Image (cartoon, rainbow, N blue to C red; front, side, top):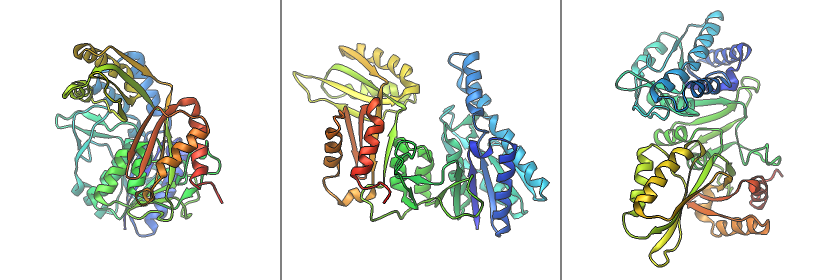
Length: 405
C-alpha cells in the first residue's frame, strides 16, 4: 500500500516526539508499505513566527509573511529525515517548492493548483521515505505561499490524491472524531467512522480535528482519511475513518461549536436588487470569508442584513462594509464579537423530519436565545451568545442521544 501520513505540531513538538514519529514510520514501512510523510512545524512555532511578524509590522506584507512563517516546517522535516537515516532508513526531506506544490498567489490563504507526482513516485521507487513540509507551496512567480491554518492537512490529502494513495493517515493529539468536544462534554464518544459530508460540516462549523479544505479534497478525490492519535501505542487500533460510509444508525452524528466568528449587522438598508451584491463584492475581493447571512423581512422598502466573518478579519471587514454602507445609504453598521456558533450535524437528518424543531425547543427550554439560523441537508447551525455556548453543546448532545451509554 501507498500511505500518506501527516503529523501535526504536537506530534513533532520536540526531538523525542520526532524520534517517536520515526519509529511509527519505520513500523509502517516494515509492513511493506510505501510512505510519504507530511509534517507541521513544532507546536507553537508558527505562532511564534506570526508574533515576530506582527511586532515588526502591524500589518505584514503578505509575501514576506509567508516567507517567514513557512520556515517552521523546514526544521521538522530535516530532523525527521535525520532520525530515519540514523535508524538505517533511506529518507529525504523536501520543501513545498522542491516537490513543486504549485499554488495561486493568495498569500496566507493559497490554494493548491498542482503537485509534481512523478517526482515523488521516483523517490518512492528508490525505496525512499519521502518527507514533505506541509502548509506551503510556491506560486507561478516563484514566491513561497502558505495554505492557512491547518494547511498541513490539506497538503497531506492533496498529495494523497495526486499520488492516488491507498490511505491518508492524519496523526494528531486526539484519537479520532468525537460526538462533541470532550473538554466541554465529558460524555462525548469517539466515532469509528463518519462520512465526508458530515466531517465537512463539522469542520466548517468549528470542529478542529481536520481542516475544512482537506475534507473537501478528500471527498472530491475519494481519499480515505484515518484520524489517529500519535500518542497512542504504534499499531493500536482506534481513530476515526472518514470515507463514503458513516454511522447510518445515527440521526445526528455530532455537535460542533465555534467561537472564532464575529457578527456584522447593516441597518436600514434599501431593499432592492443589487444592494447585497454591492455590499458583499468588496468583502469577497478582500478574500474575507462570509459565513452565515440573515436578512430581515423588508418593511417600507428597507431591511437589516446580518452576517458573520472570522474574528481575525473583523477589522478589515468593518472598514470595507462601513465604506460601502455609506455609499449605498445604510443607516449604521454594528458588530459583535461575543457570539458563538453551535451546530448539529448528521447524515440521518436527510430522512428524519423535525430535527431543527427539537434543537430549537431544547435551546428555548434552557432560555438560550437564537440570533441567526443556517441550514443544509445534514446541518443546522445557530448563532447564540458566547456565554451560552458550553451549555448549548451539552444540552443538544443529550437531547439527540449522543451521551455515552
